Amino acid sequence: MGNKLALHKHGFQASRLVMGCMGLGGGWTREAITADDMKKAHAAVDAALSVSINMFDHANIYAYGKAESAFGQVLKERPELRDQMIIQSKCGIRMEEGPGLPARYDFSEEHIISSVDGILERLGLESIDILLLHRPDPLMEPEVVASAFDKIKKQGKVKSFGVSNMSPTQIRWLQSCLDEPLIVNQLELNLAKLDWIDAGISVNQKAGTQLSFPEGLLEFCQMEHIQVQSWGPLSKGLFSGKDLTDKPETVRKTAELVRQLAEQKGASLEAIVLAWLMRHPSGIQPVLGTTSPDRIRACAEATGIVISREEWYDLYVTSRGVKVP
Image (cartoon, rainbow, N blue to C red; front, side, top):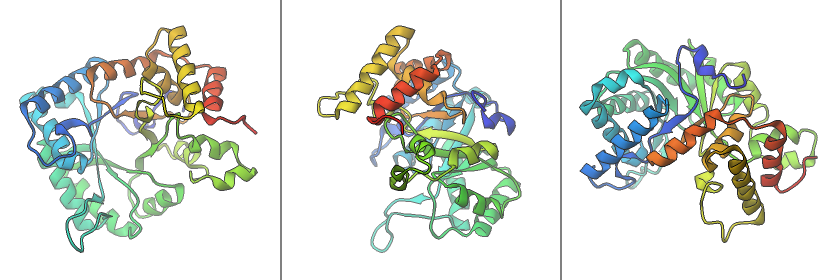
């Protein structure tokens, strides 16, 4: 797949980077959205569009729904922006709601349908482009999910569907009851959390028994034309400016290598970290967690950076802290 996105095969001309909208709406409080929150939301959306980022990632729980509400207000004030965007949201996680109602996952037909209605209401839209199931629900019944998806699709509320944090077996199981393909799998992939790479090089190695990343997941997604998206692609700024005083030596060495490459290539630290991720042939689409206009623009530099095989391995092995077997 290389730099080609699987989403393009499914009719979505999505940008290589996605703006994650979790930080909109004033954060994880129950306080009302302020004028300052809206000013920041407009600035973040403008920054993304100015560097050709046209895909926006939401979830119904982000900032207790305020992230979608703030974004919806942006669209209400500037409706012409909708045609420039691919909008994706997620459902399936339920927050703690009182005694006997713990934090949980819910892939019931009623919850999926009501979640989509809530998403559309907050965004002020009649439809979104893609809906993802946020995390696997141990009580998932594929035929129930399929029924919900079918109703939502026929009502014109969602164009396509995907998942997040699922293994090949879970995807196959769900897909067995669906009439159309699942087109996205959003996973935690970054330069600090390397199990997604280690799993591939640790086949027939004792070290492989200690890994939790599902075997063959990235290869499966490529074969099935499922877009791999990365949440947390910048490792919370670990290699792009965060204070590393109390961090392990491997982290400090990796950050220094990122800095050196940034200087050599005349690029931002964020661009190097993301370009490394995007160098993987599975065509990873990073979902940016920042809503800072400056950082969004810094991240966008990644699309013009070429990371060589040797540079890629140098970063990987340095972060890994151990030579490849």
